[in-house]
Amino acid sequence: MVAEELGEFERIRRFFAPLAGPGGLGLLDDAALVDCKAGHRLVVTADAIVAGVHYLPDDPPELVARKLLRVNLSDLAAMGARPLHYVLMTALPAELGPEWLARFAKGLGEDQRRFGIDLLGGDSVSTSGPAVLSLTAFGEVVAGMEIRRNGAKPGDLVWVSGTIGDAFLGLGLLRGSHPDLASEHRGYLIRRFQVPEPRTELGPALCGIARAMIDVSDGLLADLGHICETSEVGASVELDKLPLSHAARVVVDLEPSLRPRLAATGDDYELLFTAPVAASETIAALSSHLNIRITMIGKIEPGAGVRPVAADGQLISVDHTGYRHF
Image 1 (cartoon, rainbow, N blue to C red):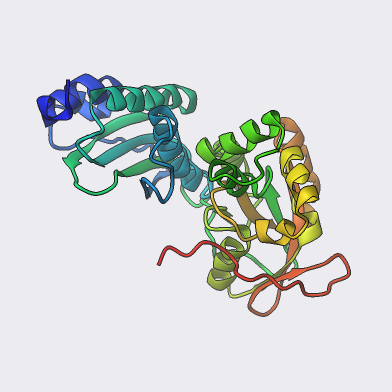
Image 2 (tube, helix red, strand yellow; image 1 turned 120 degrees about the vertical axis):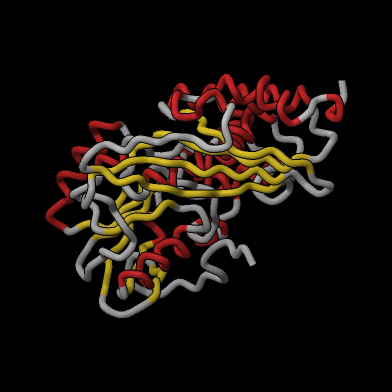
């Protein structure tokens, strides 16, 4: 069967209607119905991924779907929101037929069950260019408890969840770098690129603790720069404190010049936040409770911009601070 034999409505009925929640109305209408609890706010975010830019065209469709959903869940987590629903837009070339769609929908279904989110609807179109996949996610947060980017204060400490640089290294491996790296390290780093881990438990748990928060999508230094710009403060980051996975440390030991670069690479989807010094014990307890590594890497200062520094405070030169979309 070729893609042309399957029309838009048959695609919706076969692959996406089974993913719809009650608000999606079986995907039989042009719009969905969404309830919001009293005393809560809806948090809405949208992200798109493009074949050849954000994922490799040969990546398994299940993993493409999971990455698409997870990068949006990461945005919700960065505001302290719990995920609820999403809408999906696909622009697919003709060669991605029913088998690709079936595997794509299977990946969505797996992560819907894991993260407690369901499909409300969307749109499906064809394209002669690369595949473009866009997802808009809806979450909820108690009104007034949302965590924005503009709350950082001088004296705050800067924290980051998980490890940094794995996705960049994983993409490099897929493109042929470090061919002699042990298979277990290769598998781990590639997985981190293909299937990020959104911190959907940590984000809401930081409400009332973090003053400002963002997820690391464009690069740690660049994303901390967004907090600094919005909060009208500066920051310093000790690059020696950058949390690395065991696999990443193996690569950095082989190529030490990579370490400062990892602070400027994207696709980590870890939470980067600031909090007052007095919250440090609470953050450590939260790290233990959720079994998520949370590392203090710097501090917020008066001024502007982000300074990458060594342990002795000396400035470290970094060629660029993160990914640029344009």
